[in-house]
Image (tube, rainbow, N blue to C red; front, side, top):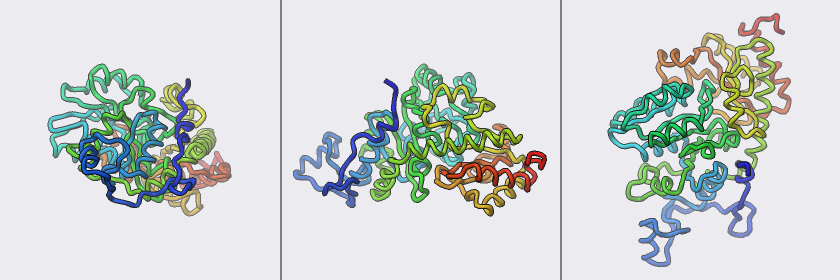
Length: 404
């Protein structure tokens, strides 16, 4: 039977205390026990269904975590206060002093900075490699390597990781495969393809409203329970706890995720196809010209399309800045970081969301200073949006007037 992430997300609704159609929000930091033994058992991880303290988990966080675990097909999940909270606690749960990580070289700037600049303070080091070159990736594994880290669709270059092949390599060498699936919820199901742990920044597509930050780690029970251990669990002891009010809000927004992802993908495909026909240097996994198009197509859940992220190369930062400022003036969307919003968002990653990556490394990985990353919104009249984007390109010299 084909894995159905959207239907899984809809299963088993939790109702409110007074038969409300939405679950009640657990507005408590701590929880009572009928007996002292019940409290002791909970501290020791022997009690099911009993809540201890909201830094460990809360009913609201549990409801959201279970929904997202079902979406990815994992047994358990744990939500965190931010995407970086999910990433950092996962890496620290797996790695200790002297350990090693193999990571994709094109990843979110915060993830890169954490591995490149922070983890060495703990004597944990990372080799950054071209994740699309499986031979180089496997050659980077060392005896002390604990995990391979990648993004399903990379930020910002939109490279596609071959999850089944990476899983084979990880298992061959006895390491874990950790995949950030933020750019492609519902579209890709990494756990079903062999990933051990799947991470999302809930701030982005899953929430979709840009009104809060959040993260989630989806994995098996052993890993999630270990990360929440009161003795040595990274999620518990570092305190990356999501607020119950926020988790309740995100849970409600998951019910429109399937509809939103289809529309994000539809709009991104429309704009990409037409701009490519106009001669624009554009990268979108849904285009035949994308180097990983066939790989993406072999792995994706087709009904949700190729995602809402596209990039355009304006060559120079000056042109990119002028282009984005004009688009904002013409109300195409907002010059802002982040993604997955109902309005189109755009920024120049080289000087923005990937600015943590040194310029020489940006050049090596092919990150142009004029690269503009679009998170296409839910525009009703996408043809109108496309025409305004094209006009802005012509006016800023990115596109020759002959294409008008």
